[in-house]
Length: 171
Image: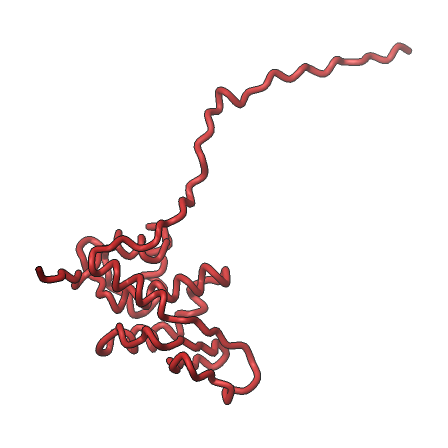
């Protein structure tokens, strides 16, 4: 029996893979240049785009930063992952130097020590490649934690509080 791989993913698939809400994904489509024009009304995301979005989401959610800070390097990330076989990134890291917009994909054995002083972001790509591959093969990714607050029945929460007694001062 042949294995069926999803060639295109829907907006719902992307939300499940990235753990983004509908509003967050809509914002990202407006902010990230590689996503401009993606309406989400039909399957329109490739697995490579899903991988790039999952990696960016991991950085944004882990560092609690706005995706707009990664927008300048998003073209390089999307173009690299969409150019050819996206599964080749399983044995690589993504290294981003936000100050000058440098992006590199060294093998897991190499670290960019020659980049010198300054902040850089390094992320292992293997777990993200494996999750997107599993999802593309029809295997559900890891369970997504619910971000919805539990519903509270307001009627049960009412408490009868004693009224303050008014005190009058006698002159």
